[in-house]
Image (spheres, one colour):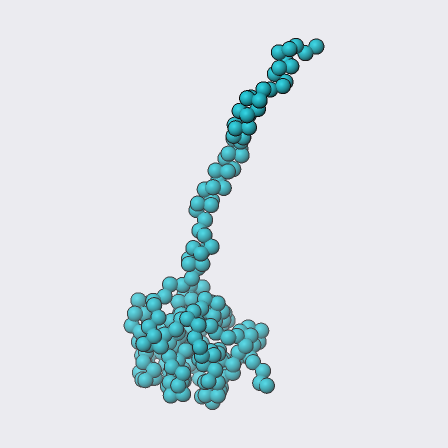
Length: 237
């Protein structure tokens, strides 16, 4: 038979109930350890914005006086990946003519890839022996060791004039191995006919974009059929 004392204990007073509600729940030592590990991981893990910043390539600021407009990350990574895969498949270094964004992303994707940047902006001298000063007005005033040294050449003429593309085409011919090179050109849609005439290039389905959202329609042209890459060659209407 239960005693009066046991009955009293089995029916707590209102004061005791209030105290029990106020008391925080107690975690087991194992639960506390797991919680501590979780909180430490959250502190060490970068935020989404920080992850993007770490993954993005650091470049000098654009200088519009030099007609510099950097590609957005998707464009740079897509084209750089194509260049890297070509370089691996044919064991050739890459020449980047006036496109420092692609140089930087190539080195990010594969630090050991052999790539030469030909560029007017001397801020890129920071790349050391991988930098060659280049003025499109003097298309063949380049070190003799670069002549016909590349099976992969990618170029982005600084201006959308026919005269500029004609001179850059001379540079491409200087750098590329005759009849056995992969050529990629990033320039405006307005240069479509000139690119075909000078270098036998065809437009791809992939549409390059710039971080500054240029008003001019930009295109990627190649002298080889990329098949299912880069959106393939665009079919003539």
